[in-house]
Image (cartoon, rainbow, N blue to C red; front, side, top):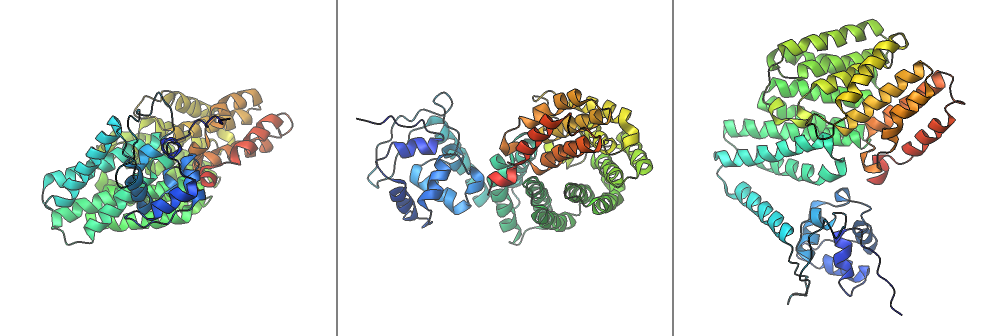
Length: 437
């Protein structure tokens, strides 16, 4: 009797099912490709089942899998759905024993990637197309970062940083070197954020310091300020509030020469550090200073990249709410700001939308309602956050949810909110850090 075949979870698993091989045989065959990359049958199986994603591959493994299956790894690890995944029309073995797959969308993706590499590898250093392609890649990542899981972008981020560092290790004309250092600083800053989101503050600070070296070479005040903001963010979520305050204040020294939206971000970063340290007066002054800074903002080169590189009005509301949620005497303002922040992040189609900031806004609203002993309102506020899948449970969200739990205890509501505490404990058992290891 023939056993029904399991519905594949990824395109890779579907393609493996089409071959009459065991995982051990396939792992051995992959190890004998031109890349000579050893891969265990267990690791190959986890990739095929969608348990690791792009974070479970390195550049050599990605090249080996692409050579084996004639598809980019992004396509191979895509969740399998007959409605979404391109139809595989021909999977006959070629004379070399490799599967030849005829997939329209994948062919186009591969062609675009090949064209991109040709441009990057053959363009003269002074060709404007060269910088334009790199800038386009970095802008795409900056735009996507607040709205997509880290695991979707990590491979591209690492590859882009590696390319930029390789180019900078060659001798470049001065103007070209400045632009490359600018893009390397932004990319390293994104990797600092990715490390922080994955619960690795030490790695985040290493990336941030590297980014600052690049920003110094680019001589870009806006970048220097933005990167101090990132360092403040890393320190804040690591519970090092005085360090977070120090970085925010250091960044402010570059604001006069920068002029971008970081001029709003830094005082708000200082505000929530002050609030976490219990300094309500300084926190409120910093919030007012940030709101006033909008009148002096002029868009700079960093803001033009968009996404995580620009600080917007919804994030202003979220950061203010995050600071006020620490202060027992500011409960009314905390509710007002957090409610406004939740509303501002309610539309996922808005370019300003960010799933992490949206979750933080909901957590702050829950904390503010708990201060008012409104358990039902707190449960309603935090419910969308507790529904997030593990790949979106970044470190900042986990810490925000744990602050809600602390607020329950602080308000003496542990018994009344027992269900909420149980849900929080279940949620925090599977952070992003756990699923990427």
